[in-house]
Length: 208
Image 1 (cartoon, rainbow, N blue to C red):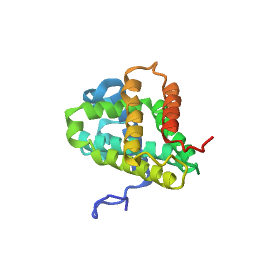
Image 2 (image 1 turned 135 degrees about the vertical axis):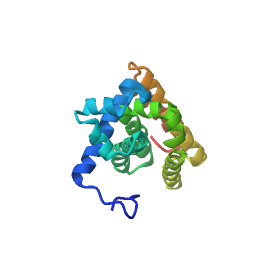
Image 3 (image 1 turned 90 degrees about the vertical axis):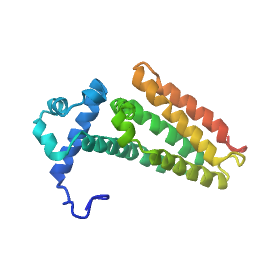
Image 4 (image 1 turned 90 degrees about the horizontal axis):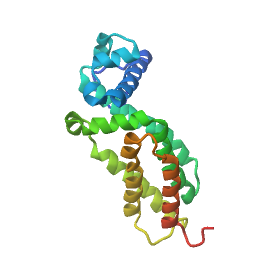
């Protein structure tokens, strides 16, 4: 059974899971193009090339589909970012990879960024899909990593890992609305600047 599935919910087949993922991906692109309100089942079905009834077969309603969209977007980000961060064995390397991979994912998945902003701005999104625990967990995980490397002497000892984690996450998240609203926003240059800023803020005295 899939994590989080109800005890009496039958496990989905590979084909059903793939179809749900395909529909959610089409929903992301539709929201990015037409906005949350414009992303009807009819519009999404046109984009993916299936009947509206097939979407209704896989998703009870728009709320059900949007929950899958938010979940899928988060899982895609985690799958992209986590291996790049875990591949680094030093504190400075981890921090650089963390910032670069977060922002590179945004760059390469701009429609995801736009769709998440559109969903969050909608009344339904604020009520049903906004999850403060995701933000808290992201800060907590980064704080833990910073603290561990700080204890190992790879970061300067005089900063608060919790405050630093909040600042890093805020700098990353600030790029989302800029990227969404301005196609010319140079997120690669922004990434280099943010990496340099937080390298200086955390660097141990003996770091070359």
